[in-house]
Image 1 (spheres, rainbow over the protein chains, first blue to last red):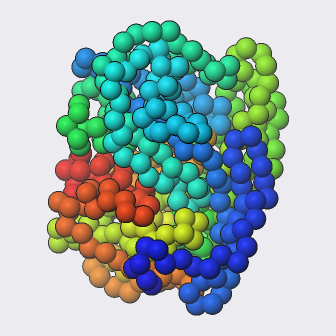
Image 2 (tube, each protein chain N blue to C red):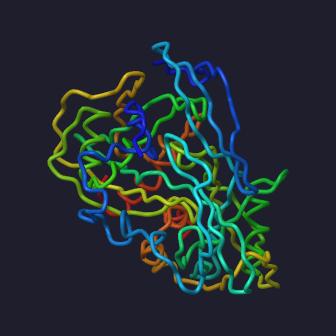
Length: 180
Length: 217
């Protein structure tokens, strides 16, 4: 196998065969190094941003029902990055819309591809601070309440069932950068 | 559903269910596997319709028509691949990463050993099997660290294990698979995983952070 990151396996065909308002599904037919061909299926959707928002000694959480997994989730604010937005711009907007907190500073902690066996989808984790309370501005599909969790309890809350990757990851990354 | 046998390296690959009782909850952490929340209804958000709308050899996708608290009905889309097992394997002070080409992302990635959990297979056994297949190492013990959904709209769990007491052996890769084991000193593992230079490393980040937070690597 080549270690050259620019090396690519030839893509013989790329087909989008399933469209929703949320993601596009399809496959790439790829020629593998041994000469065989194989279809790699993917679901592609816009980038997401997850916001670690600190106010005093607490983190901002949202409590909402996730119909797709049929669970009530207590998690970090998150949303989709819109066209032309950076992770930090999108993070500030989502934080303001979902929680009503306006941050004075937002920084990108990390970004990466998610669920690489299934998706083409990137996630950015941002840290927001200097929060000023303003008005919430929820989309019509959002039914959520805002709460804060003491930093010392945040990881335990995140790991409580139903645990989600983004929330655990956001807290641990912010900890690793000595932000909490 | 049975997937192509050469897709064993991928999380999300449909699994061969012949060896296991798919209905068994044995070995699954609470709220995962056959006990996952999406297998039951929530009376507060009634599901009026559910349909499989896209099937691939890797995963199944569909749509639920759900009644919101406001009374209106809306479509919620889901993807339902197999669960994944990810292993933080520490050998002689090194964390074992795997390097492989990801055609979906057209790049070579550095990730932790990961694979799909076969239907009915206890996640711990999947972790043991994937570690051996991808790196050749057999583990004396596997400690469950955490199980979580990757996000609120993917219907699978990632089960994270720490592997100890490693014995080297032969890898077992399928045709077309080319996975190389890369040893990284534990002290450098997080920064290596975060050196994203064209690499994809989502599956490494949270497991490594969890293992470090628990003093396991």
